[in-house]
Length: 160
Image (tube, rainbow, N blue to C red; front, side, top):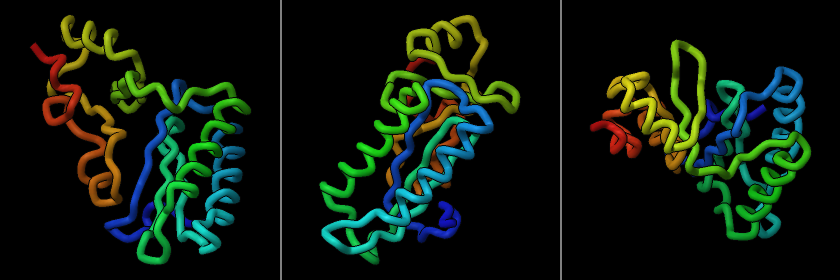
């Protein structure tokens, strides 16, 4: 099994946030399907060295080492099609970019951006609340900029 941990620092990466926490059985099934997908993933006939991880029972992370072969438009389309297939099969939404995920104690919560604004207004979340920046696109950015305090994130505009 290839994990994000085995990928080089400059690996290209995509983070997909589920609209809800995955059950233990869903995590196992989706992890198996994801591993099969990345093991067969190719770009113009060249095998891609890729990884598939599920983190916090909510985030699917796919990474590819582009030193071996570049992820082409067609291969990226295949990965999006794979994620859309998971959405249908498990009744999930991985493409709601206006949903904000944050840590509450050690639990991950996710709400709409407008609801997150209300949480900031009533001080349920503050500048030190850990939020997730799913726009990161490399392993290095993932390691350094994915889980960040609200004050250091694009979502910081909710702080008044």
